[in-house]
Length: 230
Ligand SMILES: [Zn+2]
Image 1: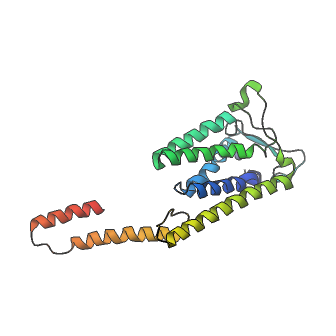
Image 2: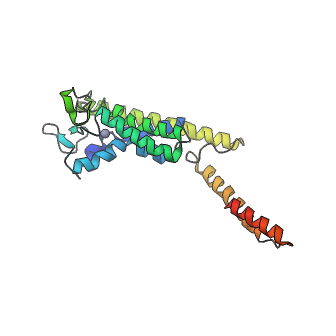
Image 3: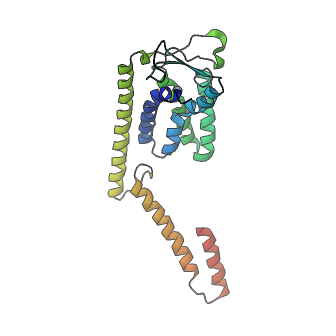
């Protein structure tokens, strides 16, 4: 397992770069969810690798763990149909927590993993789970050219970082001009201010309940208000 870690890191940066780009365009979707979604197929891959269901085979006499020097028989998690099924599953769970739009975006990001792996992998990604039917395996094999694939990955990371940075700056500018916080993830001071506002209104609610009341009726009303604010 430890030997496999650097191989698995082969395309992690590119996936995260893509997630950052999506965050810039869809600020309401939680960042941690996007980061998790973009690696979801590999997250499921790890226990299947440990169980021997999916395999890594180093290419030729390449040093184990060398960048991209591996054939990955992830016949369930990285089959096209398997990736769609896992992405739909991820999206359905996300819908329950974050609503339809965010769930759909997170499912799309989960599936993007397969399409970002496609140019890199050495024709080892089957179409059907378990590579049944003997259909051709897919992958353009850019990992055969480590400098080229690393450059492509770096380009995805830089694009994602630039989009994220521009979105964060727009949020900060909107915030400064009084338009309010657009996304708490993009700008921490806004998140801190939101929490402070919530804490202040809650404190005011509790404080006002401590003010002595003349009649039992107003004390009852106040109790009701306190329940509303908590
Ligand atoms: Zn992968």
